[in-house]
Structure formats: C-alpha cells, structure tokens
Length: 110
Image 1 (cartoon, rainbow, N blue to C red):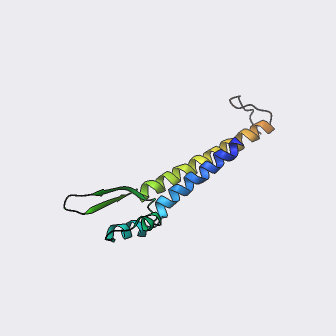
Image 2 (tube, rainbow, N blue to C red):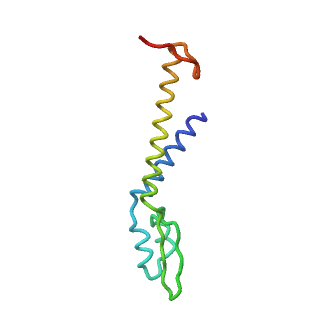
C-alpha cells in the first residue's frame, strides 16, 4: 500500500513540475488586465504558475511567476534520479540471481 502512495506522489510531483514548465499564463494575464474580477472568475483562473501577486505603489499590480527553466531542470533531475534507481534495482536483481550480495566482491567473468 505504501508503494502505491509513494508512486502516486511521484506522479503528482512530476505533473506539478510539468504544469509549471508548460502551463498557460492566460489566467494571470486576465487577472492583471481585468478591472475588478469577481470571486467566481478568479476561482476559474489557472493561477498555479503564480508565485506572488502584489499591489505596487501608484495602484498597479505585479504578478511574479515560477521559473519555467527551474521547473524543467527539476523535472530532468527527477527523471534522472528515477532512472538511476531503476538501474540500481536491475543491478541488484542481477547480482541476486548470481547469488552475490551487494557489496561483496564479484567473481571475474570469463
């Protein structure tokens, strides 16, 4: 059961990074240009990529987004880590089939 939860979490994390990296910005832009959007309109906007919204002096609004490149780099690291784990598991499985425990000296193969 715990493995399923862990895998579901990994999938959600990867989906979150993908949304940050590739997600639309039309919701925040509509929020920025709208005179006074209603609560319902705001709830329907995709603001996932927004890291900060603040009112600046002079009456303007500033919207900061999460960095797409940072999200892409995090996705890459996440996938590489996943591949490294798979390779380690395959190696451990192969060693186990040969009757060798991890950390033991491996006999030379001729």
